[in-house]
Length: 383
Ligand code: ADP
Ligand code: MG
Image 1 (cartoon, rainbow, N blue to C red):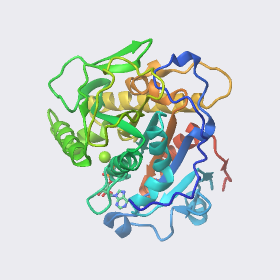
Image 2: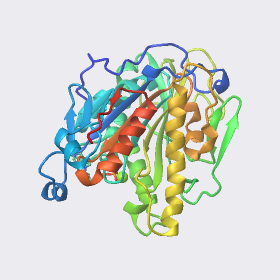
Image 3: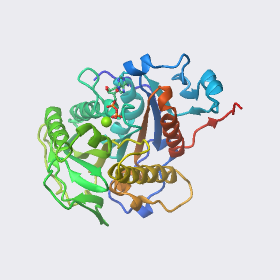
């Protein structure tokens, strides 16, 4: 994969101590620079182009990583002329750019033993799945990650050997479902002193080729349909977590393509030279305000709570003082506890629509993004 490696825009610091399973309460807080917040504005779709107002809603400056309420819109609609700066501000359809700017460092850190988590957050139809999964012409974060992981293994196979495992689950109404084994009932979150927080029984598949990963993803995706009357509606109300567990140790004469289970799954790696990390790639439920039937509002309440908790958890993780971090307030944050605390790298990609009709939801998403990581916000009120 052709990639630019010169940039260090994310500012991730290179620190040692790559272990996954140490006691979380003794871990230092995540450094602010280890949390990266990106905002991605998708192009207007045909309907939005046809129904667009005469003036743009948002002023977007990818070079300055700035997004602001456009002056004319602000004036006419009597909206504050709020402006936001983020770590990354992207527009357009190029999925390679978002990978290189917002994800690649997290993946390379995971290969070096640091846990990582990448989220796509935003209202339904803002581009979360386009960003995470993409299309054949524009592969998203997940396939690009898979390619980079295997590339990385290939180039370092003279020094290290790897064991790669994947799992795929979804959380719907605070219930966990194993997408690789949909009939498994009663998945629970366990907390083990040595192993940390994990879901069990959860199927983990050992993989040795990208193609194998794609087959597994496809099968998992198909399982999201089960029990759902409308797949798109269902997928917009559930969080999906695709997890790669990367285990490696110094070479012992076996090359790539020879996966070796040198540690059983339940035993955390402790021997010197062994690294283990998890990388979570997450397509979150739609962040929009729920309305409609009792059922919809119930789903909405679960989603709200978990997204609110997610924002709070990440925001608190970057605080210097030791504060209570409410991991337990939602299944999502509980499952991710080991991957959010400590030395983890977190990349939050907030996707927004450029359209005037979505102004309120876009503003909510930008506020979420700025709450996750304090950024410059300036509001001028026109009244
Ligand atoms: P979400 O997963 O947030 O509900 P989708 O990813 O399904 O939204 O996007 C909604 C529609 O917009 C899809 O047809 C998708 O292909 C398109 N789309 C989203 N983001 C982009 C983008 N950056 N460039 C081009 N098309 C996009
Ligand atoms: Mg989607």
